[in-house]
Length: 107
Image (cartoon, rainbow, N blue to C red; front, side, top):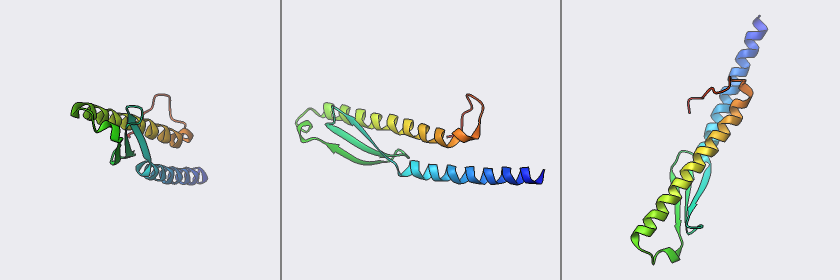
């Protein structure tokens, strides 16, 4: 019985370490979003911080509303990609836990 508890504790500690590593990797990931076939691009971290915005010079001659729409679309694209990336990464970590189907982790 003692051996099983010890093994369970070691597994829990390893899982905690794996989870922390995965969260750090997510925070440092850089995800690219774009709009207008790449005329506007946004680089966002796994924490949804926007690190860079690039706007092609050809867009600068357009109306302000066009540029605003392209920027909003690029940010939204990056947000969707960050969410998908985070979900996939955390699914990898949780894969070895043998959780019941439909169980949602708190993140």
